[in-house]
Image 1 (cartoon, rainbow, N blue to C red):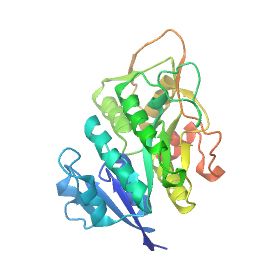
Image 2 (cartoon, one colour):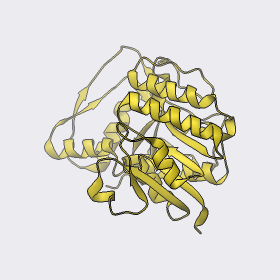
Image 3 (cartoon, rainbow, N blue to C red):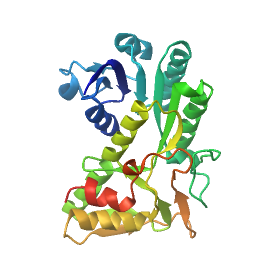
Image 4 (cartoon, rainbow, N blue to C red):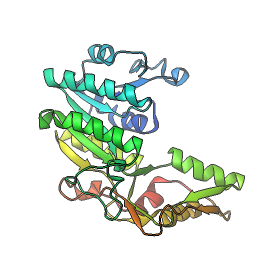
Amino acid sequence: MREEGKRILILGGSGFLGYALYKELCNYFDTYGTYCSARKRFGDNGQFLHYDLLEDDIHQVINEVRPHIIISALRGDFGAQIQAHSHLAEYLARHDCRLLFLSSANVFDAYSKFPSYEFDKTLSESIYGRLKIKIENMLLRLPSKRMAILRLPMVFGNASPRTREIRDALLEGEAIEVFPNLVINVTSDDKLSQQVHYIINRDKHGVFHLGSRDLVHHEDFIREIAAHLSERKPLFKRVFTTNEERYLAVLPKHNLLPKNLQLGYQEVIDHHIPQ
């Protein structure tokens, strides 16, 4: 049953994750998305608005939609992302609106010896991780009920860029890069979309780690996906960034979702990546 009264705006709605969220939510809510370069695909869809992170003012899009919930799946120039989220924070401070921000496991990439939980201190060595931390800190100054930070591990799925890269490498006989000492958790675009739907329905707020409840070595996981996708013998390029095991995993512990919305890494392979 569609809730016409609740308007949702997905910033970055034409991207891989943004569009997965749009498909999940559009049958239940009055859902809008933004696109930048994909005019051919989204220009004729009345629910999608053009928004260029570098050239347009985010306030114009917000004032046109007047959303009750904003989901930020923005990608692009880092400086422009910071400015856009600064304007979003100003808007949220003055209006009855909530923001769900898609963050990343990379906010913990300087901590390599353990997996990370919701209330662990963030610290990153990467430019990408530091960007996410800067935006998170901006949002954490807002009243808690106005925002949710959703930290994501590596996301796979039939249409995911990572799955496409593996599929293409298998077809072309090219080497697939794997990190034998990297321990990760994962999720799928389908499961993530269901989790976000639940968070919206239940008016949840705070910090969520939306990764699988179990861990796996990156090499083992990619090998299983390759075997799932094709009978061809894959080639692997094994990359060692350290001699010790290192972790890049966001495990849920404090803000747990219902069991039907949790998943293990094997489920990502078996149910979310068609053979």
